Length: 365
Ligand SMILES: Cc1ncc(COP(=O)(O)O)c(C=O)c1O
Image (tube, rainbow, N blue to C red; front, side, top):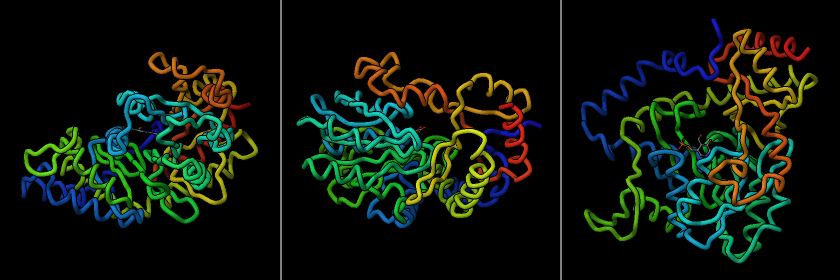
């Protein structure tokens, strides 16, 4: 039997009754939109991250969009971000009529390179939006310091892949003015559909986000600002609440698996580096391979699925390439040709992981 790339089924089976109990409670009370589980989850997640507020929303994309709307980002504004990410990061910037300014990545972590940010700041820069890629936070202190030294620039961490990780002992999502995450099913903390959350300790930003997610409503049918239909369903919140019970254990398992991959592969193939001052939740376990297609094919033939995050940088995508030339971000260009992710789930057992490692070593010969 082939090993799943992400094993959602065994995770479900291991907490089936807790998940079903939680869903059944929602079916009993019938408050499918903004039911009690929404506030319960927001309180639990705010406490987990240490941020004062959590605003659950319809997806990770919506979390980024609503955050930018809360800051009033619009035409004429610039948002500094990475081209080596899922498209949603830049999509929301362009949707609001602002301009994404792509800055290259660090070659070892694949996160936004703070040393390249300052030269891209102009009087139109409103936001810096690093992505904590593959589950490891970007260098948030450095990025916050650059933003602070230029006055009115807000930092939004796109933490869609890194919920549960830490940077200098603080939780991802609480590392800058705003943190946004995703509960897409395959994320480290996922629901069974779409979901996401915004985290902030800034009262004004939090209240703006609460309003924007319900059509800019400040009181029933009073629309104080332009908003969106961006709520997270009660049932999805209930599912995350059930999964939260085991989340610490799952993070530990992911980190054990990540360390074992690191130890077994360090001398075999270049890996995404883990920085000493932060942890990863290994949303992806990623290595760098020069002959990637061939390697993927050899692994696939032996029942090992792989994936590429991401094959085309955003500044090479048809809809975004006019914002920045591909050659302007050479590290991204090179890494996009090399990255390949191996199976990773909290439930991946040691024997299957040994098989993956062994097959990879054979495939590289
Ligand atoms: C870095 C990043 N940002 C944003 C998103 C968007 O999240 P969602 O799919 O929940 O809209 C994702 C999801 O894959 C992501 O990986």
